[in-house]
Length: 87
Image (spheres, rainbow, N blue to C red):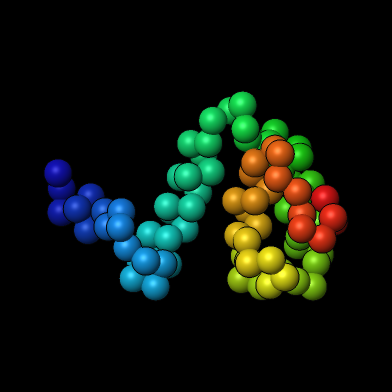
């Protein structure tokens, strides 16, 4: 394993506050990419949901200040819905 690869690896048992932002984002998007296809929202639905969240006053730093979810993760699962019935 190269030194560069080793330096980008992160602890799987870290708290969010212990991860650097790049590692955190990589982890979140990897999780979304690897969701089983049978539970994942299709791309059009996912983008539609994110557009609604993007226009919502509760959105702050990728999180819903009303319910505390990470909106990109919540939107990625087909059976999920907005706690405030916006989608």
